Length: 84
Image (cartoon, rainbow, N blue to C red):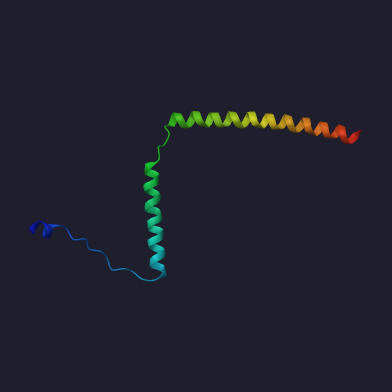
């Protein structure tokens, strides 16, 4: 029985009422949860980030050239069709 009395009692602040208080609580909860989720993220190392960035840049260059060539070929093809 003495152990139960020794347990810490949680003292809570009185509930705030009103729209502003609810908005404030919601915003605070949002930021707490966001920070908690960001701590769970497995962030890449600097070297991983650099190598993945290089892969993305190479893919962008290859796709740009490919789409440019296809655009040129299709524009020539349709120009020949319309001229005939």
